[in-house]
Length: 70
Image 1 (tube, one colour):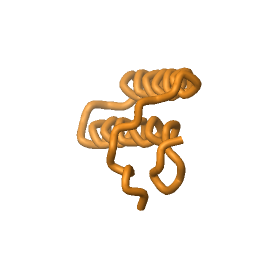
Image 2 (cartoon, one colour):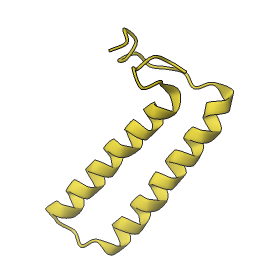
Image 3 (cartoon, helix red, strand yellow):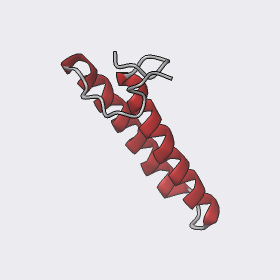
């Protein structure tokens, strides 16, 4: 693993638009899921997993596969 794998990486100006798109897509999907899924533990699990996926997608925008900043 790269030594900076767990560091915060400020997005470059070019990456900011990609991050905006990733976050907007995750929010749009979350809105649909919130409307159509019945309340309960399955919905809670799905929403938490989506939050995790959105976080990793954001990280992927700013990092190389080894964890080094782009």
